[in-house]
Image (spheres, rainbow, N blue to C red):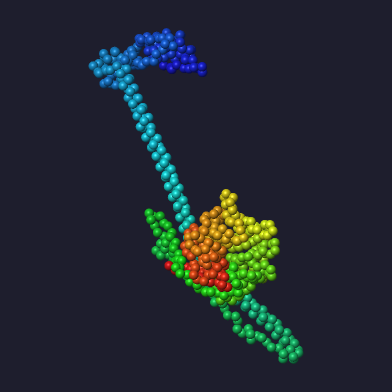
Length: 563
């Protein structure tokens, strides 16, 4: 039986055709047109059909037709068979003698049950489902957050352990390179001496040949041969090859040793998941040891750049010379920066050559000094002066450049750090992601050092803080000196990083050194060992600190010791 249809203008159509309805069968609850009334009566002629005007229609229960007896409506409900039945059904098998009830009663009872169930679903089940859905979403959010945190922790641990392993082998590489440079320098020096002897001998032989070819008695009589001085050749240098050992213990521990440096990589397994636990065999000393005090000719030692384990380039206040000294203070070499302008800062390249910055009138430059003279590497842009500098492991140069403007006097405007790769600018570090200056404006310099993990550690003397940025220039943390609990405000100057990623910075006003770990946690203060107004700072190949002081001296300090 088709349902009545409504047109776009809400006209009710006949359920048998598309004509508009004018009548309504209350018995069947269907709309009928004038033509289809007879069809409807003929279709259900054995049933009562209450046909009325459409406007007089009534909403009432529609009794279903009996499937067993044509023309009969089911007005009762067989309780035994749970099925609607007509009068004829009740008088014949299989419903004869079965218990029945009015179908309207069944309808009303089922209707009330449905109303009750609907109310229960709306009031209890749907809120329960919604709550369960919310709980699931929260659980999913917590799970996602948990696994995100787990991933971050894993990545952090991965990075941390990789860094620890890198620290160990970076140290091995550094020690190996240091020994290599020392030995090659000694051998090259000895080779130069031998070549000079060969040259002198050849000159002597040429002189002897000329004398022997002469017919003059005076030439022979007056000639004094100097061959005797070549009887003893220069002594061979004492070449010390470093001892390197790497042993596996039951395939669980890797013991690494080079001279006085020792480290152990331990592999432990838990649930068949291996992990490496590097342990270096040194710790910070409770009481540091002053190994040596080197006298200098400078009123205040400003810059130190160690070369190997026993020598360093230094410069000081009111002097235009950069001197190379040994541990006894003996001057081995001197580089003059000219009659008018002294050096701003010094460093040593990976090849062991001296690097220094200087401002000559309006021209600021970085120069390289080596055997045979100096070479200009970098020219600072106009109005920018080169200040502090350092050489990175990759051979790049990090240079602090300061911008000055002239308003009756020089006023410092901006401070920045520039990375030069192959003597060309490759990176500027001056502003954070929001365009805010990372470093404070002022007359003070930015002292810097590259850590083994690639961080650039900066001592900002204007802001009285240490700023550490990653390789991209993003700020990782700042240190203000407060944890050290010193009497005077933090006054940082020179800064270095050691083989263990520790950050060491001088505190000029408090006569001490601050030592931090690679994440900025304060570890220790080094004081009470005669470091008055420390400024210059460097590390030698043995991991000892060379500290320049105001008392015309350099303190060599041992601050790490075996566990």
